[in-house]
Amino acid sequence: MSLMHLGLPVRDVQRSRRFYETYFDFDPATARLSDGTITIRNADGLTLAFHGGRDIGPPPAFLHFGFQLFAPEEVKDLLTRMRADGVDIIKQYEDAGYVSFTCTDPDGHRIEAYWEVSGALTGF
Image (cartoon, rainbow, N blue to C red; front, side):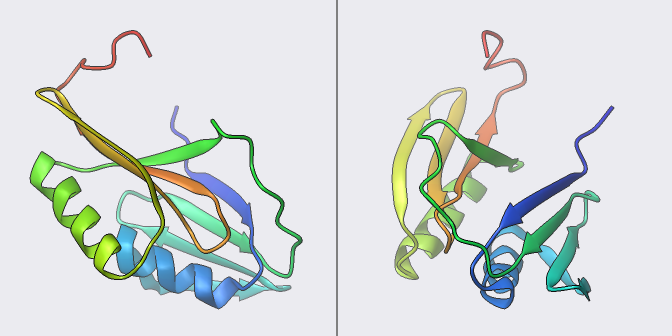
């Protein structure tokens, strides 16, 4: 079983689409608009659905979703790009088996970008 679809309330669907295309490799060719909602898919088949024009309140502090990268350098490179672009980075962590950071998208949704040695988060 795999999680393959996530719906997010957003204020501006095009802004959200561009953010996820730019930083998380969602394919612009897959973008579809229907009734004010844009869906977009990445190479792994995960579909994000941006439901536009929504009032976005602050999410609970722990609520987040994550993208696993293939190497610690990829996490660090993405962090560098996002910082240079002024993306809000709210925490960062690094040890021998786990490298991550958490940022927010334009609507305040928390996203973790991470790499881990297989089994590093066995207690999670």
